[in-house]
Length: 351
View 1 (cartoon, one colour):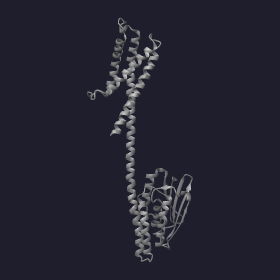
View 2 (cartoon, rainbow, N blue to C red):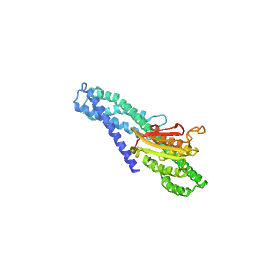
View 3 (tube, one colour):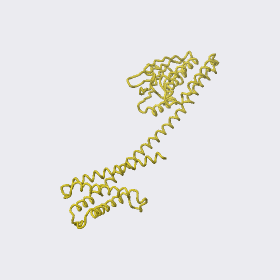
View 4 (cartoon, rainbow, N blue to C red):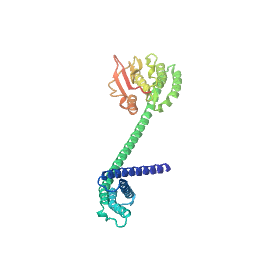
């Protein structure tokens, strides 16, 4: 609260100083224009012009805050301009009365005072109008900036909400798929079931906390993908082979969490698992200039007609890439020859 009051007082002081500076500039400029027509000394002309300018500023500022309530239909800026227009001839007349000795010429017969009077009546109201216009432009700019900031904040909140929703979808999707694979291993009575279950427990203890992170690196992703592939190979040792070719310069590249894991899990679940012959998964990560290319290729059943679009995992991943990296990231799903599928992500190589 105290900080807001200090900021408000500082804003008022800046506004007053700015108006005083404008008043001085306009007053001196008008005085310089009148020098050839003014018969008295230059210092006297400057003093009178500056006094009138400061008086106009005081009247303009007074009627900006007083009265606090105006009758309906009266705009405050009109009141300010009219007040300045009325105050100027009165101010010049009072100054003349205070500055003129006994026996001086009447006001309307004094050339110098009439010259100042006419200049004040012509210049001051138009300066007030210009000030009002600039004020309204500043208010419009401030409102536009405020609206833009509010819109940006709302968009950020919407993106955060969408991000958390997508993260909430990733965790159960990943866990259910993994548990389903282990259950299938147990159902067939594999002697490796106990070992796989122990490995899965250790793996999930390491993997689950990472699902809530908002950013990861390729190196962190590999720490998840390697044990996942080892688990899957223990389940179907005769039907799954894999290779990993990773450019060391990409290890620190940032990416959304579970990016690589989603691609590999998709290849296992939708490519290798449904195939009676099994297949191979190749993980290739390389750097291309300022871009990082992540490609996961499988030799499984390929793109089936029943899968009209991307699966749940890839759809969610594409949305997460869009939320975090925007149009700078692309996800492509294409057939692999002679069989299988290729999923490729191209994104900025940010570290």
